[in-house]
Length: 172
Length: 210
Length: 201
Image (cartoon, rainbow over all chains, first blue to last red; front, top):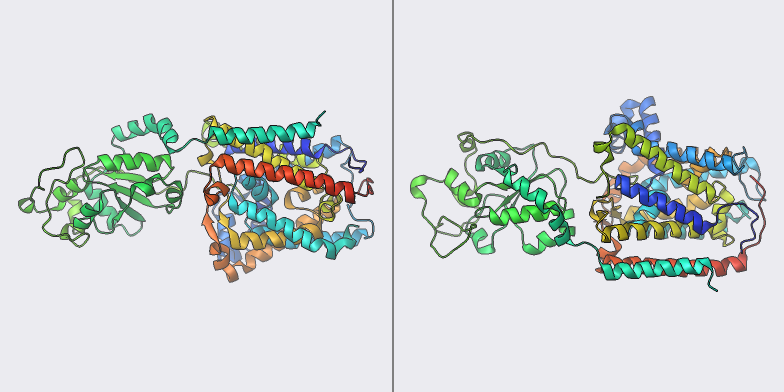
């Protein structure tokens, strides 16, 4: 039995819960969940706000934010609003919604922020390249047996495991 | 005593095995389910387009058009409308082929009459292909519409059913026959009801982050 | 017959509400699993806590079985569901890169949102980093547009389509693989789990 003294939900149970939410999404919308897409749209929308001329000259950005009347009114953005709410409420109920920084034992707070920023940047580039993240590709694509999604999933695990040893100071 | 995790694992295996035995709905099942609605749509002639409209579509540079010919190879080689592509039974039954058809494209199904085209239309609708139309009256109507009335020779008898070739062609010119590519002006002489609408997107909303 | 067409039947407002509710369930489940804490996520890659694998694959199995059973019973139209198209080149390369970022930053997009929602600053920094990385992508993609659009593109191919087997067999194979991985995970945890941590962030 796992010796972490946390009052988290049993992972298999949490997995079933998540799986039911995922299934419900397919039932109601015909597609699965998403997270990175929402961040991508918001990033694009912010760019459009600051430099609309620049957006016009970029086919990728045009596709991202100009093909919709209101980029904020896309399911991707609405869903992450829900994720933030749901995460907060769950954390609140469990007494886990306290300000802090999650970090490994041998690294300082600011260093952790720096690495979170770096890791986020790398991840952000990667998920746009692969057209999706764990939620939209691995979970959703995985559940409907999309071959591309399964390939993506294995690549993510491979990339993470290959890098883990090199950055072990961050977490151990 | 088995742990609850083992029970769950066994349940998952049993459920998966059940799926193997049960099978998934195939094309026939989907077709059967959709048939009443599809038949009603065909009945209302909402997707049958006049040869004049097809001629106008051919000359409409703003619209992507694919003419899909359902007839056998001999008939196709004898005569077909310019740019028409012959498609086979195997392709019609192949979901991957149907899914790979380009989006935002108008498809017009063509047979000698209408029967084969209508059947193909239902199949492709079951595959969720959009912007799908049928040439009203088929090749026979096309020949009647744009051919010189004095020059039309009836095809030899021997074909029974609704989808027979009614007219004869002297040589197998395929798509190089004068009637394959009639002058665009001939379309305006025909008084037809326009049915082809602005091409839509795919039916399925794009999920994912792409 | 599912999927529903909520936008047409109930209108835009209800559809938006349903999206928020779906996201709520998603975020709630992630936080319940402990994924608002980067240490839990990173632990997966040091073999100390196989939680990520367990949650992910249990979720996939659950949804997959529900989807295919609903389809077999004629309740859900599988053909109407969104199948992520296979862009193997950018998909695999992007996956590898994302994996690197995952273990350095400690989050994935969804979990970073949950972390930020529970007031974890590292989660917030991860999100800001993501925005930067996505911005860089947008600025540079024109340089490798061909790769991004075409490399290894196979359309909406499924595992069963690729292997030429019935869907049920693919489901069974995935179930067996997942159970094998769960069994392996138990063994690995028994060996490497150290029981450190447990302090709040």
